[in-house]
Image (cartoon, rainbow, N blue to C red; front, side, top):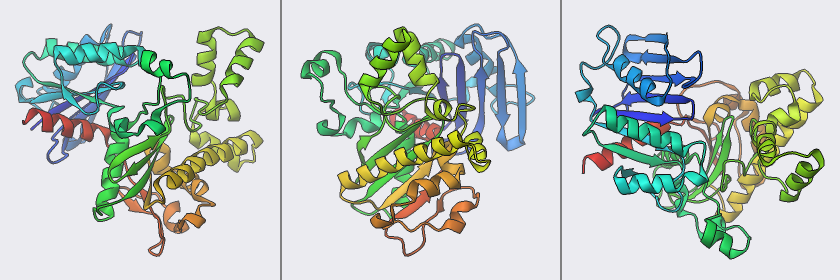
Length: 399
C-alpha cells in the first residue's frame, strides 16, 4: 500500500510517500514560501539517491500539491507511473479539540468539526483544511484521513487537563490543556514500550525537544499529562517561546511597554525562549557554542533550558509513581548529548545512571544511553510522525 502523507503549514507543505506496512519511504520533500515570492519545491527519491530543487511559482497550496504529484509521477526521477498507485492520503491536523480522540476518515461532518476547532489553532487548522480540500479536488475518490496532533493526549484525566479558572471558561469556551506533538509522543512511547519488552505496565516519559518542545507522561500506553496547553506556548522554554510564565507578568509587560495584543503575542511566541535569553539565536547549537566560549547569557539560557525540562521529568515521575524509561527525541533530543546530560543531572535519586561515554557519541537509530544497572532506562529514539500518520491512515482505510 502507498500512502501520501501531507503536512500543510500556512506557507509551507511537507510530504512523504511511504508504505505503512513496511515503513519503506518512496519519496519526500518540502514546498516552501507558498504564496510568497521565491517559492521552491524540494523532492527526494531515496532509492535512487536523487534530490532536486525546483523554483516555481506557488500562489496557493493547490499549485504546490500539483507540483508534488507531478514530481512523484515524473518519468525521469519520479517513483510512480500514475497517481492511481496512491491508495490514500493522510493529513496532519494540528487541533482536534475534544471532538477527535483518534484519527478519522474525512467526511463532511469531520471537516465541519475541524473547522469548528480552527479558533483554537487559527494559524494551523485553516491550512490543514486547505490541504484536505485540495487533495479531494486533485485526486477525487481517494480516501483522506485526518490525524490529529492533539488526539494522543485526549486520555489525560480532568485533573491534568483542567485549568483552575472559573468553570464556565471550560464549558463555554473549551479553555483547557490539549497538548501537541501527539503523533511524536505516540510513536516514541510505543517504540520505548517495545524496547522494554512490552511489559503489562509501564511508566514512560517522552522529551520531544526541537525548536518547539514538549514533555509527556505515558502510563501503560496512555498519556496522562503533557507540558503544552491550550496552545503550544505553555510548558518548557523553547527556541522562541517562553513556556510557563506568571500570567500577571504578561499583563505587566504589555501595559508598561504599551504593546497591542498582537505585539505581546509575538513577544511571547517569537522573541522569547532561547532567543530571548541568549539574544543571538534561537538555535540550540549556537547556544552551546556560545556557552563553550563563555558567553554569560548563553550559559544562562542553557541552564534554564535543562532546568525547565528536568522539572517536568521530576513532576511526571511523581505523578506516575516512578518511571521506567526517559526518552529523548526531536532535533535537540536526538542530537545534543550535552542537553541530555544536563537534563538528567540530579535525577540519580530516581535511579537514572547515564552512560556518559555512550551519550557523548552520535549514533543513528534507537540507542540505549543508560548503564545496564540503571533502574531507569534512558533512550534516544528518532521520531517518525509521518509513519504514524501513514499507519493510522492504513488502519482506517483497510477496514
